[in-house]
Figure 1: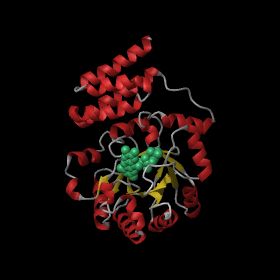
Figure 2 (figure 1 turned 120 degrees about the vertical axis):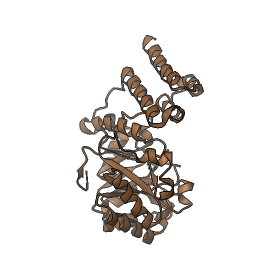
Figure 3 (figure 1 turned 180 degrees about the vertical axis):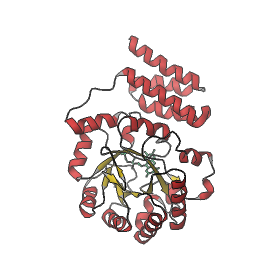
Figure 4 (figure 1 turned 30 degrees about the vertical axis):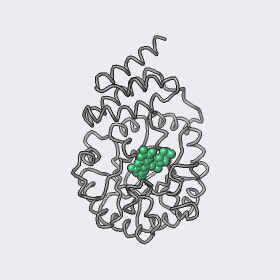
Length: 322
Ligand SMILES: Cc1cc2nc3c(=O)[nH]c(=O)nc-3n(C[C@H](O)[C@H](O)[C@H](O)COP(=O)(O)O)c2cc1C
């Protein structure tokens, strides 16, 4: 798939997930074969750019691959300024978030609430596309609510405004994360625009990836929660798409190495206090089985990076010995 001047090496993209897809996690996914990883959403409100959180999200040094930075907001002028600012900070692609149902975002009528207001969508897209020389991509849901699935209309507006590619999460705003993602609207969108379309929602296995590609005819797939605690899912899916065969599950030694590296990167990125809190979330996803419950409980009690690191090492040493 082509996004402006960038030819993606395959059809797999890491979904933006605030609080999850930081630089440490994006780099792991890219190493395991994802062609592109979209950053966590950044507010278009300049008043918050000077916070630790925004600064962390805007840092790209050490970042591998094509840098796609997501912005969120509802004011065309502020969105245009945010896009320019992030290009100055090193973004290669600007992604606009019209897919987020979070209350905090929607109160300000940003994220997926914008889909209720197609003229405003047009104003925002035109302003951002005109403001920067890099490709601008858009992420939407299928509509505002199940009775108003206006994804096709918004997609056509996006195409007219010069959006370089469109990712669609197969739920409406009202559905939040309930039920299953539906792919019929995504298929209809693909049939009604000529810009690249990316399918998103509930793609969590190689077989599901194959199914969604075939069913919708889209150009690429975007994977979010399926990669939590499993960044190697991109290798598994790519292998399956290429060969039709499933890879053996990841070896214990490799999983150990990935988790320990991930911990180190989290401590580096956030410092010890915040790093150990982020680590609890990620380690909980890596080791999420019922028989790993005691491990998780023990891990979550720890208050230093050194103890967390040692407990993960110990866990794997025990696993190899038994
Ligand atoms: C914890 C979390 C944070 C998210 N943050 C964002 C975000 O910042 N921007 C965005 O466009 N979507 C965000 N999303 C939505 C995802 O990008 C994706 O559309 C959704 O999770 C469905 O894909 P999945 O089933 O592969 O997870 C978030 C989802 C989760 C679970």
